[in-house]
Amino acid sequence: MRLYPEQLGKHIKAGLAPCYFVYGDEPLLKQEALDELRRAARAQGFDERHKFDADEGLDWDSIFDASQSLSLFSSRQIIELVLPEKLDRTASDRLRELLQQCHADLLLLISGPRLNQQQQKTAWYKALAEAGPVVPVFTPDARHLARWLELRLRRHQLSAEPDALHWLTLAFEGNLLAAAGEIEKLALLDLPQPLTLAELQQQVQPHYHFNPFQLLDPLLQGKVKRGCRILQQLRQEGIEAGMLCYLLSKELNTLQQLQAAMADGQSFQLAAGKLHVWSSRQPLMQAALNRLRGPKIAALSRMLAAADAAVATFDDDNAWRWLQALCVGFLDDKEPVILP
Image (tube, rainbow, N blue to C red):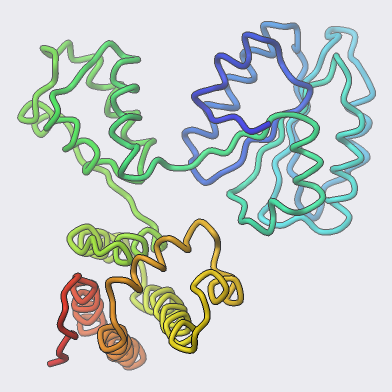
């Protein structure tokens, strides 16, 4: 069963499952989900807790010893296991063996990083999904961040006017930890409600954060202003221009291969399947191909080549100028981009 962090409270009221797997790339939501499960477990008599990291040096026998022994002071215990980026064959086998040890007085809290589609098809992931709820925790995207902030404000008996809430989404996109901290500080100030834009701009320091992968989707969607904003922030955060060239090269190359396959009479779905384009990204790719014709994609590729050449000669400023021009080049227009 798949649960999302906001569903945990209702789920816990019906009773704890023997095992939970909390995974994802959002540290605040992951920590809060685990804390909520720990509190519920303590309330039900799980007073003893053991924590292990499933790295290469883990002594798995020590986990099994802990799972099968009870102390004099506690009849119920929690075993927490933190999974690494990848599990080798031994770890996968031992993890599945551990899941067979579940009983009424043992709660397994397993956490891990964000998983791709291939990892979610592995035997160990399927075993975890069968043993108990899986709880994915991801950073809300721009569409859902406003709702998350509104609920967070409400938790602290705060509210914000629409334009103030919109400003908050821009100020803290990709950084929920900072947003939570600022909201807690606002709750201590006893400000008039609802909070206004002017009040927030006076009291709150923006702390937005992006990762390089977040640049791709807005560009494919033709949201150039957003793409340029993310690009500027990535540069300020110290992301290397060469990394962005690599990611954009893969994206443009995929678009070109899809375009060529469709020109040969293949359906988009067949071509995307052969190129191993994730199903979640196929609508983005298809929409981009509907907007961007062959000359436009070729022009974008030439811009990227110029940026890559600047990286190779350590001309960082020129590389970023070409990347900026490339982002603008994703504008939805009928004319091909003319290179200077």
